[in-house]
Image (cartoon, rainbow, N blue to C red; front, side, top):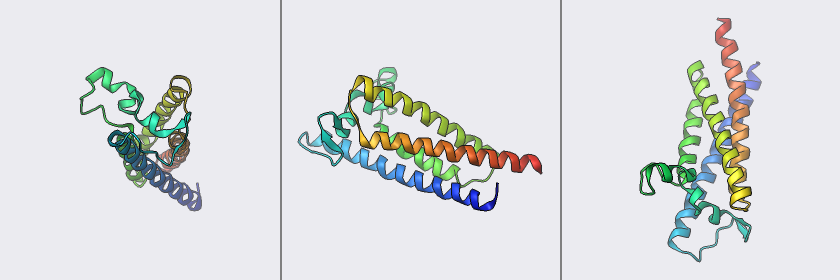
Length: 164
């Protein structure tokens, strides 16, 4: 892969991670604001069936609806999904900058895990909550873009290091 393509995917990855961080911080803000003030209406609350705050404050908005059941609602692991998003996008931002095969493998592995999580949460959103969350769907798209970037980085580094 030529240097221009490598730079393109690097910049795309950085952009995607930064947008993911902004959306994750926004989701955390909406969730905590709504918990304190039930009358709070977020910008992403468009209608009764297009409400991000309803999704964030559902049982699936913390610990993916799983960790609370496994470890208890008060468990340190049962955090808002937005906290996991902040950790994920920060980690991907760092891993995306390390040009070593081990980092590319981790970068790709975490991207695959995020896709599995996105499919799970999209299913919950559509078929259990019967809602449409603009912020959630945007993160699913970002996760797909990160998978694309991580695949290209993985292929580039695996080819580069095997040739040496």
